[in-house]
Image (cartoon, rainbow, N blue to C red):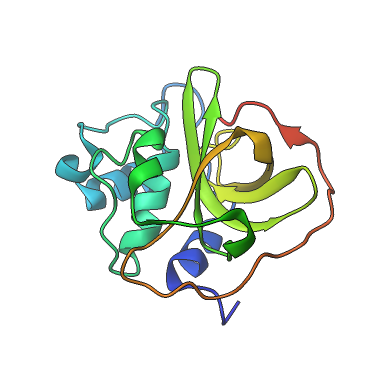
Length: 167
């Protein structure tokens, strides 16, 4: 969509990217990690079985020249990145951070309904998808510090079940 930020268009272009089956690894996901680099990720990333939602967000932001958070692989580290947004100020492309059993999750806001945010993210059922994630699990709403917020909240239909664990 033309009026969306470049990083969100980059994210949409990867929809359907999946982890490799079994002990194999997705060359695409490992390629994202290699491009981002060990210094940004905070670790040597060599298996798509390691949660990669933060890798996905960092890759998409770098496609627009935006510096990701340090230790990008850790989803909750995104909760202090950039500038905070109030819920009524959300716009497509905002980075949303969630709590989940065993850790956190991070992805991009594409819309919302009364109970959930619609999140374009990686490692949602082992692939890049749009999932509904309960608003009550959201711990941070962020936007790149050096970019003006473009857009406004997008209301969507609650067309699928709410995700309970994105890993």
